[in-house]
Image 1 (cartoon, rainbow, N blue to C red):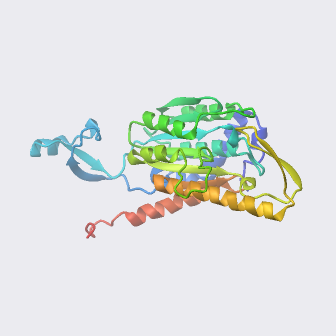
Image 2 (image 1 turned 30 degrees about the horizontal axis):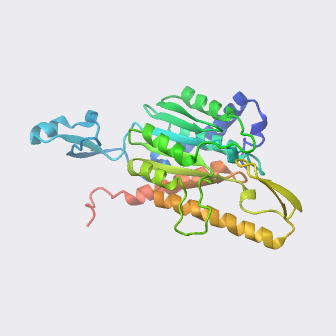
Image 3 (image 1 turned 45 degrees about the vertical axis):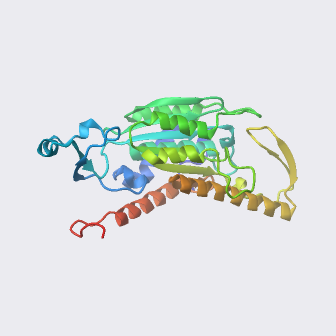
Length: 326
């Protein structure tokens, strides 16, 4: 499982990055030569005629001057997708990510997901910008091109300090709002997080996570991919006797007896309800959802997601010569 990645967190940072890059480029080789929109359902990248210019939404560099001169009305060249992609990435490195009971921690899996997105969207002219949500601040990186830029982002993410007990990092909703203000050009936004921050504390089915509205605002302009990182122990407890549970962000501790079957069942039910809340919120916000787990082959999960999105894109693209929608 997770070929080439087991025990990577025990390596020095530069060796970790080299190992990670090798794993991604080797196992995602076929995908790296495809279209970036494989991450999300979308159309191709061919010219699709012209349409009237929309002030404040269209870029002047796409003006179709020939059609504009002929019709005396401003028109822009319309394409199914921009060949030059700007990807904005929000990586969660708050204390709740410093947890892992399988091969890797959630933080390490977030780094891996960030690297995979970076390599999958890399290409001629494509740019990557990032916001790193850390222990006490949000660090921002402008959108730039190139492998050196991507590796620099990954080094910074690997070096984000761990928070002590009781640390109160910036809210996920605040980080998403900041990313929205930075991502001025229409493109792809990827949020890598466990999405546990800001979940409703009540059982009210109408209660929404605090970050949902901000994510919905991002999805109005951009394609959005939510990469949800989870650990198996967050979903169910094993029968291992008395243990101490610690909330990494509040510092609260509680001793529980995992030998109690009813307690384990309640824990699993509450965890399932929590994850369902996240799934519904992502769906309402208009984000594509890619769940990754620390006890699964994350590369295989990414591959399955990409192929599923490409099938959706192919099914949604009308065949030429068949006419439009009736």
